[in-house]
Image (cartoon, rainbow, N blue to C red):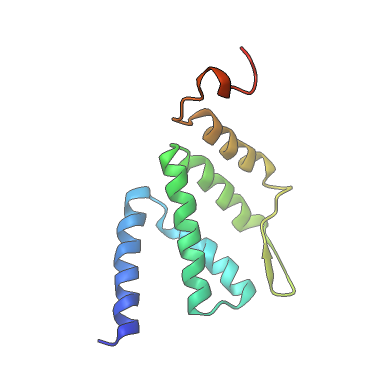
Length: 122
């Protein structure tokens, strides 16, 4: 097996194990399909997309906000634009889903802000 094939196989195995734990397998593929169809990705750009989306899901999983991130990605799969070979999420039509995700991340932060870290006094 060639070096590239070996690396690709390792990436697929690790990626499928990672995705199996978060429940985001097809959504990752769908998101990167949309980006790469628009931007005519090569193998390297496709891999970068998958790594970025996996990272997004890992952060969402840490904050227990995977459901909100999935809603945001699903919205953008229906509402994105592709102009002149540039993929763009529709931040206006999917604003509510994005705000829900950001609110979830802020509200479930495990970090103790302490007495001086709370920006709004209670």
